[in-house]
Length: 126
Image (cartoon, rainbow, N blue to C red):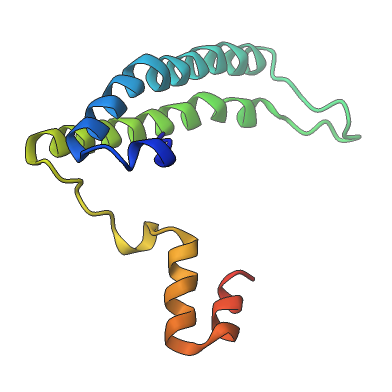
């Protein structure tokens, strides 16, 4: 949710405060709108047992449409985790470290290139 080119120049507490406000002003209302409208869309499809008209066997598609609100709920759960991360940063003054497996790909490529040469770094992008 960050615009790193601007926020990286601010102290960590300011970054966390701004992000916290933005999550509640933009992120959660958008995700809740997705869940609400996705539920209406999926429920209507389930109610009529919607099937694909493009398939000669009539494949049911209502189950897939019901995944829209489920996906929105999972995104909201990630938002809760990020809000907690902002609160921790406001309390402690530093960002909690992320796990190694969620590092930026560019950072992994640079480290791989430094360790084993450029060919092994190119293998990461394939």
